[in-house]
Length: 141
Image (cartoon, rainbow, N blue to C red; front, side, top):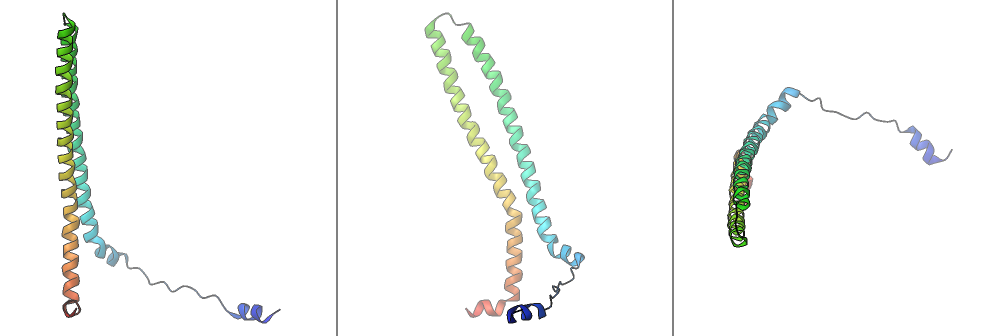
């Protein structure tokens, strides 16, 4: 046996030092974060419902208009009349889709802003608490 093996075998394994976790203190410490994430989640779920409602409304409206356009197209008596109906239909369809994109983008922007508000408020509280604790060090620099 060499010296390195003798020395290695002489070292006894040490048990890790774990600090006992007080689950009540841990939960209390994270309550503000859990509440903040819950508020954010509520806003996101309500926002998803709003988007779904808007998409359903738009799809229903579009189906109705599509059916009416098909009826008008089938009643055409000339190629010129058919072209006019198709042209009008496509123009209004494109306008409505662009408007729907604008509407959905606005809803998404509102949801995003509202969902970040609880996080911003929590961050401000933490920053104020941190600035209060380290007032002397922060003002010196």
